[in-house]
Image (cartoon, rainbow, N blue to C red):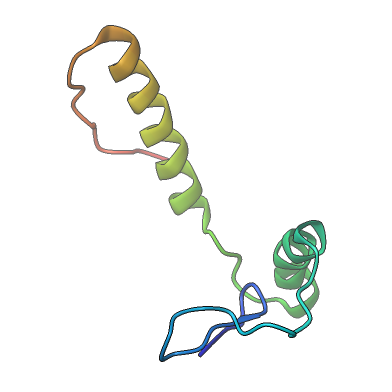
Length: 78
């Protein structure tokens, strides 16, 4: 099974990455993920909505820990 977003091939039976295969450095992978949508006019991953939701949840989790209580997650408005 291959994940084309990150260029990693994982053995479907074991769920592990086979040894001996070339692996791109993390900086190169992240740079390609960032630049590919620009060069190929493809949708970016994650989308703006997904990124904003991740930031919102991270901020609410930090606030929840600081206040030692549950925090309601409001509807995200962009």
